[in-house]
Image (cartoon, rainbow over all chains, first blue to last red; front, top):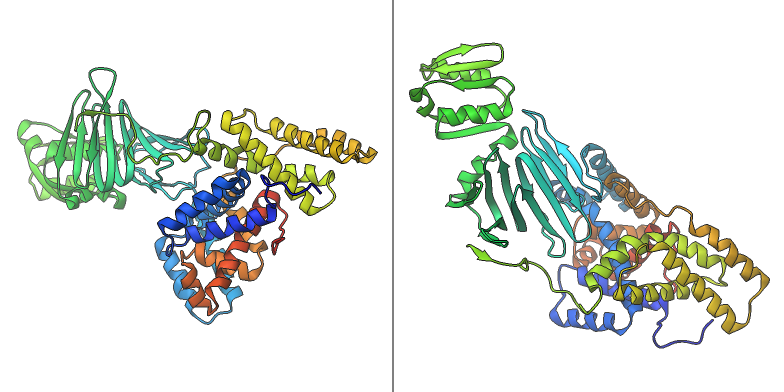
Length: 328
Length: 198
């Protein structure tokens, strides 16, 4: 057709080169700074190169969904399975069957977020959301989040309750948790955010995150959180505590349906149980409220706790239809 | 703590950020808005072209012009512009080559209709997307598929795949590059064009 045009390379050739660059660039090994600048130079040569590269890259990244859905252990299984002498076609079939199973099992798989989606758990409920990018959000009892995202950013609004976030960090697509007037910007992290009526707690287990709050003027103050940091924010102030990471991990016992207490005042213990149960614990009297409690309890079994309180702690327990009253 | 700061931490700087839209914005738009239209675009171009290579030349030219436009300002909506550019390109070429046959004119008219066909649904949920990926993988020639699955699902490097399969690294690289090209064609056109044209 047209006479060859310098600004318009042969499309098949451009695509073949783009594919080579992409595969080499995405290899875990053997990609160095010179390669990176050579790729830059090639992309700069013509928009046709850039378009061809973007197109293949987008297709390749769509296939990342396969990676995101095969958890570590499953990938491990695949690895072992394929070492056996099964014919390759069978190995591939096994991979696809496995992925199929994952797809069906992931009942709360999110749509590619465009408009905000709302996810709620009831009192005593727990739910795991798997985002298409491989990030995971676990919702604790009585929690509500809105999730939205586009090509540039991902956002989660914590309306109430508690979430544990394991974020696949992407510098080109920042992940922000919004809770009231606070923002937590993920910098590659596992963290917990809990929002009660008048306070917000952020516990950082791995990586880094930034907690931002409005300051007295129009700007924002921000705190950079490190592993072991527990930030407690009330309406207009934020306190930072340093804790052993293991202690923070105890606060994640809810993921296994447990509550862990360590010299926790009974009033607080009751408040914790009440987050998970419709039947509420009521503690009356100063002496009872301040009694220190330790141990592991099933979050959804307030009756058991009441029995322990009665028989072990010698407290007076009155079990009514929808409340359990504890006095000393 | 307590510093007032704009958000710049952890952000990668944008290559070639100039006036107008940033490269990252153009790229996001290209992936989100343009690529899903590729199947319809190629169908459109095919009706007015003489060869597969011809279609590819035209598609490349359309993408380049879309890119140049978006660099100044991201077009909104995308679809009418894409097909306006494609139509102008076809008309220009017909004029230049003085081959405006009745057939071509008819096609150009008919093509107006094709533009309003609903494009591929962009809001496919992840599960459908996964099913689609599986279907796309199924369509790959076996040796490409093996390499792609080993890379994508098992996360192996080219060298590791080569060792596992007992073949040369160059061969694995070839299978991966052909694999990603075929995958793009399947995903964006539902029509595998395998083996590459080069």
